[in-house]
Length: 468
Ligand SMILES: Cc1cc2nc3c(=O)[nH]c(=O)nc-3n(C[C@H](O)[C@H](O)[C@H](O)COP(=O)(O)OP(=O)(O)OC[C@H]3O[C@@H](n4cnc5c(N)ncnc54)[C@H](O)[C@@H]3O)c2cc1C
Image 1 (cartoon, protein in one colour):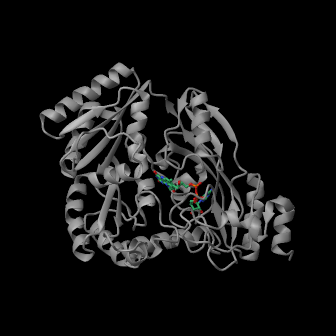
Image 2: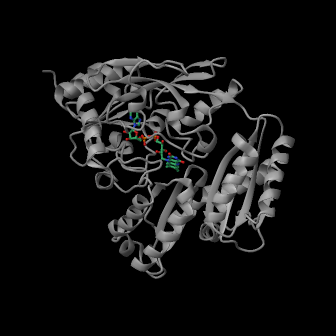
Image 3: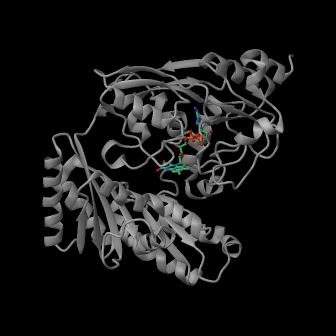
């Protein structure tokens, strides 16, 4: 049997098999710098056939492989473990936009395409690819699909799953399945595509995808509302949806503490209100008609919200620059948190109707267990998704506080479970939340997941140690 790495070099060319420490280093550390794995090699194929040849080599030699796109994932899913026995399979060289079909409103792409390039290619055809997240300049569509990424436009357009019509997959046996169908209706048996979306590379490698495109909105306007409580934010969401229907594209909740943190760390950013408020909601409306139409809709909805005392105050951006300024407040929360120190992060989802009760119930539990800890609570309220991060009390060092990670997780995740929520809304499970998954999924559900994994990947070579 040919030596494994010799077989890989023969399949994709010597220069694309990296096995020196310097060559491999950029692929081994996770996004937040929390973990650096070891690898036998980093493989950089340039075509679907090369991916398939590498997977066949891995299967033959029983080598575990870790698919990697932009390595922006937040749950240690795209880096190898510490054994040095796995390979990283980078999809970065598969970066072609294969075809745009403006009539079918679809685009067929390689999995290694950077999300921003896909957005730009859609815009060049007068279309919109609505997936948008802060990592869009470096994450890939393969990674977005493998994690079923969310982002800022889920309320209107859905998660990545909803934006995908077809996939091309290299199976764990090294076969190529071309499911690149641009069909909106296709009831021909099990939906295999949906199995691979959100599977975090544990069932096969995504090498291509057919994506849905939408008409470009004619106008997009933004407003910031100030409110007394998360319960008022829920009320505002229903009111906005009743008034604006699918024109409502963004609905982001931010607590007073979040904006205070942003103001401390980034004093140059705008402060839209004279005084503080308990909660804020960033609203975005898109219109397929005109800016006038969008402004009219928003003003009527805000008027109704003020009348019903759902909000205390609101500012509407009157220029693109003002709108960008309001979004910057939201986007700078994670950056302000990172500048201020470490915190224990949770990426949770709940039924929208239970969010206010969840926050009201969980904050006191945290405060009782870790007196003085700071809750940094913000997120895509319209999708029921909260970033529910816990920062150390004043005077407690980051290191001392982080030792409580398991106990903090227990308080938050037990409460999430009690309110019918999920411990991962967006980022996935990876290696980081494997134990949490085992704790909160029922044995029946876990057994079905294990059965699917065993059926598709009996050798267990696809991203070993992730999810299950
Ligand atoms: C600043 C920042 C903001 C973010 N914001 C959001 C957000 O708003 N919403 C959200 O959902 N997520 C967000 N994320 C996390 C999100 O998961 C990733 O940014 C993105 O979806 C991952 O894409 P990637 O190409 O970097 O994948 P990677 O990090 O490389 O991989 C992620 C997972 O997918 C697997 N994988 C990658 N490519 C493939 C493939 N072709 N086939 C099979 N498996 C594959 C990997 O093995 C790994 O398990 C954010 C991350 C950062 C750093």
